[in-house]
Amino acid sequence: MRHATGVYPGEGETLPRQIVHLFPGQGDFAVSPLVRAARAHDLVRTAVAEVFGEVEEVGREFGIAPLARPLLGDSPPSGRDLAAATVGTAQLALFCSSMVVHRALCATGRAPDQVLGVSFGEIAALTAAGVFDLTAGARIACLLAQQLTRCAGGLTLIGAAECRTHALLREAGSPELALACVNDPGETVVSGPLPALAALEELARRQGLPASRLRLPFSSHHPSLTGPAAAFAAAIRQLAARPARMPVLSAVHGGPYGPGDDVHRGLANCLIRPARLPKVLHQLTTHRAALLLEAGTGRALTRNARHTLPPAAATAHAPLAEPGFPWPPAAQATTTPTGGPPTAIWSRPDDHTPATTR
Image (cartoon, rainbow, N blue to C red):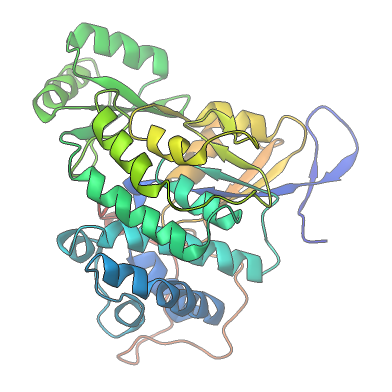
């Protein structure tokens, strides 16, 4: 049995834990953890070659240079390199990176029973569930990138609960600001124009609340972005959606997509509606404990899950960002291109250079 063993909260009997893959948005994306994992583990390297190779033709349609060979070469691009490249490069890289982790986890016997997508991560979550094939998912990521160029503004992370952030917004008195994300019981994100965000950040600091601007050159989850959302929905409508092979939960939709739900519109809603992660995490564990595995290069969703759910309900891990995650050993010791020591797969905090939110 591939499920981890766990005790269902409130009962004494031991039940198999469900496995859930968490697909993050754009606010916690770094290239270096993926590169290190590919150098250290054959199955990750194989997944990188396969996934990035399969979408190269889609990339060319959008003027994006192939990424598989550079990522596996001696001088892989950084997050800054991807952000400075053709529009869509960073988004395509993030989508593919999530699919790489998903495939590698499946290859180790950790295939998911359910998937959860947060904002941009919904594209990969729907792809992992078979709603879209890999090339369609890649095309959706690139089409979204085009619309993000029309989403002026930014996003600010606030170290406060949702109710406290609402109070802060009222005190700021700017109708241009909106709550964008509720990440966990003590962390939120606000979206809006840059001058209004700067004033909000100063107000938060005066009140002793942590506030930091996400390094993303756009706003999102803002009700004013109806134009880009409508254009994005129309652009992806031609890509047929198939029935999902497993439940797909959305932090923006507020739970699992049902048979009658419009997933194209659901993806577009990520531009205009807030993402509330805690609500959906609690839904995941209502009937069964879970092993949560972050299908990305960072650990933000893992941290949010640990802050939201009790250990009896869920265990969360970030495979590419945590030292010691049990990947199968490579066939032989993997060294750096210069012949140095084996490469670790964890990332330091200063490695995280987001290419472009949740």
